[in-house]
Structure formats: C-alpha cells, structure tokens
Image (cartoon, rainbow, N blue to C red; front, side, top):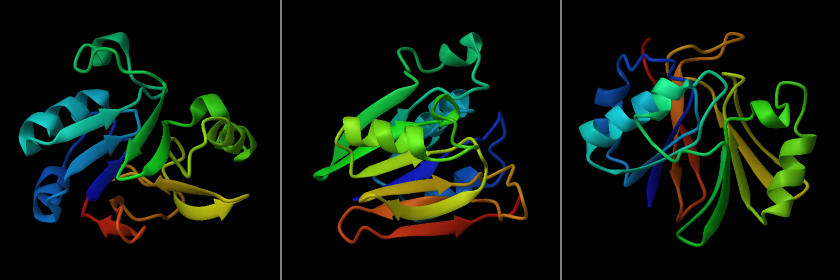
Length: 162
C-alpha cells in the first residue's frame, strides 16, 4: 500500500495536487495545519484521507472534516501508526513526549508535522517520521512530502516546486 503523508499546508496546495496524482497513493494522511486542504484533497484525489488537527486549524477549518482529533492511532496493512501534528507533544523541543505516547499506544511508527523539517529516525525502537512541509519548508529544507510503502517500509521523499 502506498500512503501519501503530508502536513502543514497552511491553506496552500500549490503543485501538491498534480504531484499526488502522479504518485497515485492508495490513501493520504494529513498531519494538521491544513485539515481544510485534507478535505479538498479527498475530493480531488477520490481516496481515503485520515487527518488530525494542527495548532493553526481553526473551528471553521474543522467544519471541512468534522470529528477530527488531535491524535489518531491507525493500523494499515498490519503497521500501527500514531498520527499527531506534534505541538501538544513539544516536538520542536524534542521527541521524549512523542515517544512516550507512541509506546503507550503500541505504535511502530509515529508521524508528526509542526516543525516543517524532514526527519526519519528510529529512537528506542519507534520510527519517527516528519515529512517536512510541501509548501512552507524551514531551515533550508526542500518542499515535499512522503510516500510510505507498507510492503517495504520505505519512506520516499517527493520534492515539489513551491
């Protein structure tokens, strides 16, 4: 299964839709700060979308995807994921709280956004992936998102022009 993982779209889609169409994912995960865009992508791509709320998602944004929570535990193809934007777990300061929650939820992979900076690392047996941002990268990172392959465990970065 190919899963597109995005975050931090901040009301901008830019070249993301055309890039996602080329990648043809089976489903999409949006990690917040753009749940309105998550709803638009669901319509545009006609695929299942899982989303969590981010720090900047307003009550009006939430109308686009009602019942969206701040964290979600999701099992796809036998892999247990923890989805969160990351601000409630202080990911800008470190990964301790995020790791604790991932362990509590028995997640193999913790997915988060918030920092707009890509990382793919394994800490204490938990894989942590932050895809960066497809529209507002920071600290010299490139704009992009991740395609995660559940068969191989590969997280491929897909770069796009902003």
